Image (cartoon, rainbow, N blue to C red; front, top):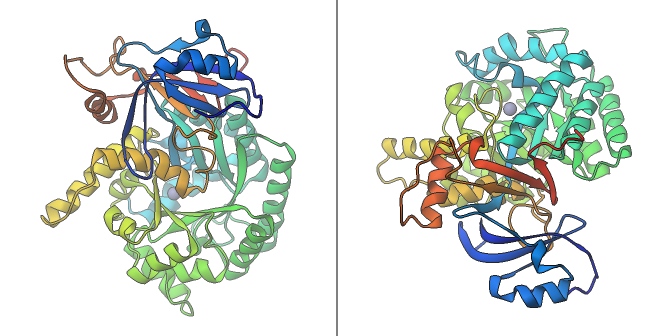
Length: 451
Ligand SMILES: [Zn+2]
C-alpha cells in the first residue's frame, strides 16, 4: 500500500481478481484485491480486500463506491498491438494469396493511395480504432499512409475514442510498381516534420508520432538519413519492417551492397535505437540480433502475417535468448485478424510448428505469450513506464473479462481456477467476453455516448 502523499483524488476503486505479468512471473494471479485509480488515470494503490477500511481512510474513498467484479470476472492488462497498418484494415481477411513483394504491389499500394481522400480515411480509421478497442487493444502502434492530413486524422480518431497510440506517417521515395504512391525524399522529410509538429501541437495525452520509413526497399539512403536525424533530434519512436521474407533480404543485400546486413542499413542511418520497433525479423542472423540487443531496439512478432503471406517463422525463443525485447503484432492486413487474441494463438501455433520441425525445440507456454501480448508489448514500444501491467504508478490500461458472458463462446465447468479460465479465454474468447476496456483510467468500451 502506498501513502497518499500527493493527495490525489481517487476516481474509481475495484474489488476482485487481477491477472498480469511481471519480470518474475509470466502470469501472476492476484485474488480478492482492491485496486484504486486516481483522477489522472494512474493506479494509486493495490491492496488486499481485508485492508479496505484502512485504504478508504488513507485515500479518502467511500467503501460503498467500491465496484465489485462478478463471479469469475477478472481484470487483465490491455493488449498491446506493436504493429498494425490502419490503412490496410478495409481488406482484412482477403488478399492472402501472394508473397510479400507482389502482395504490396498488387493489393497494398493501390489501396493506400486512396487515403488522399479524407472521407475514405475517416471511415476506415474510425472502424479500425473501434474494432481494435472492442477486442481489448489499449495500445496500438499504427502505420498509416504517406498522406499527412489523413494520418493526422488517424491520430484524432484514436484520441477521440481514447486509445493509446503511436501513429506513423509512412515515408517512401521508391516505388517502381505503383508510381503515384511515393514522395520525393525532400517532400517526405518536410511532410514528416509537418506531421510531427502538427500532432504534438494538439497535445493528445495518449497519441504520439512515430517516425516511419516503410522499409529499406522503399527508401533511398538520403531519406533514411533524414528520418534518422528527425527521430534523433526530437527523441521520437521509430518503426519499420525488417527481414520479413528471404526474397526481401536478398534484395536488400543487392541494393545496399556497402552495408554489412539488413540491420546495418537501419543502424548506419540512426534508425536503430531503444525506441525502435521492427516488424517481423524472421530471418535475422545472430550478429544482427546482437545489434538489436546492443541498441535496445525491439521486434514485433506478427505470426498471423508471417504464415498468411508464407514469409517465415520467427523463433521467439532465440530472440529472447539474445535478450532482445519482443512484443506481438497483428500486422493487419498481412495478418487477417485485428484481434490480439488471434496474435496470441498464432504465436503459440508458430512455436509448435517449430517443434514439429525440431522435436527438441521448447515451445512457448500460454503464460509466456500472455506476457508478450501485454508487458512485452509495452517494453517493445518503450512504454513500460506507463503501461503493460498493474504496477502502482502506471496508467490503468485494462480489460474486464467475463469468461462466461451470456451468449459467449466459452462454457463453464466447476472447479476451474483462474489460470485455467485465463487459458480458455486466451484460446477461445472474443470480444463478447470483453465487458469493459479502460485506457489511462478512462472507460473506452462500452463506447461512451459523447463519441
Ligand atoms: Zn507491416
